[in-house]
Amino acid sequence: MRYFPVYLDIQDRPCLVVGGGAVGTRKAHTLLQAGARVTVVSPEATPQLASLAAEGRIRLKRRPYIDSDMENAILVFGTTDNRELNHRISEDAQRLGVWCNIADQPERGQFVLPAVVARGDLLISISTSGKSPALARRIRREIESAYGPEYARLLDLLGALRQRLLSQGHDPQGHKKLFEALLDSDLLESIRTGDSARIECCLKEHCGDTVVWEDLMSPVK
Image (cartoon, rainbow, N blue to C red; front, side, top):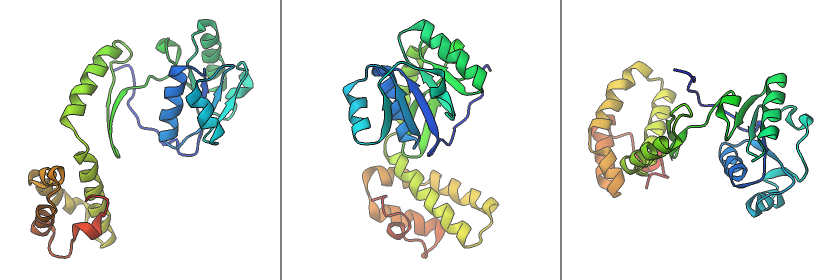
């Protein structure tokens, strides 16, 4: 296994994107979704990046990259179509100890990005270690068809229930059978079909009368 799989908490952390084209735009959007503070450096920028900058959601520097742009960044993405510039970005990152991803030359960076299926806080990642993005996309489509938006609502409900039990001093180890029973029930199907009465029934059957699903997790409606 060449790469170590990990999910990073980059909430309110500075990240740098060098390149203002379509790839750089996608990277900026993904970083924003994870709550990062995003700076994009590029003489040219897509209308989407310009709009994000106008809204104050990113910092856009319309000029060529300089090595000081990388200072304080925890992640940097080289997304330009200039291989010499991408090589320079990679070298600067190694010198400064910053984790770097080069879009079209993954071997020059320290990490690669997986294909991701996101269902709320449920994240399913697929990586071919850079060998075949096409295969990763194919597998992602298959997973997307198998795991619909109901999984996001299920996860919200289970997470809220877990927090409720922990706040009441329940033993975390004792939750295992309870949650396995809920997952073996028709709770997921009830959420998929929006059958609130059956959701309530599942919770009462396994958790008792004190757990009311509408009070527990109102977004799961």
